Length: 251
Image: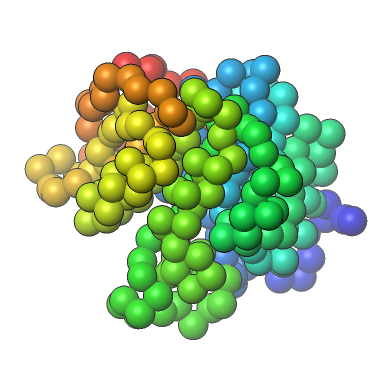
């Protein structure tokens, strides 16, 4: 297994902590949503986390390399992305603590075999399979549309994987917040933190960062808004810090 980039790959250096990432030139590449979700997490270094929809592995690897989490398992349905994520773990020298597996979050037997976890994070597909324009690139289409698993499947899988009191965290479009919260309730996940993400000040919220606890109630905290841009192509200081993998203030 080579950590060197292939002819159709790039090698990107991300953040001040120098996280190295092999990515496809034309296929799926991680989006800022992964960084927003990483910045929302507060993992205990002694804990075991599962990353659902792990893609090229950026969130799993950051949990191990930046947050020093003890064990992380990335679950991804696309074999080529699993292979890429394994090479990225090797490249970042965290392959002793981070592993990746090709699997479907709808496979309850598989979920039972890897449970329990202290924390689960999920960056699920945002859009119903028949809504909007489907990207002609297969990797991008599966990552963004509910072709091989729905947003609600990811939430239910998170609940099945967690210990009592375990943390589930995800990022979703605001338009789907109501159905997500309903699925939390039916899956014994109790919302504990929420933060809305805005592209610009004064615009409607685009995304919601959500944290819930399994079988444990806690007062819901709605955190200050997260703005992505000050102006076109100019990120806010908070997002610039996220892109540098700097620790953020927790509210």
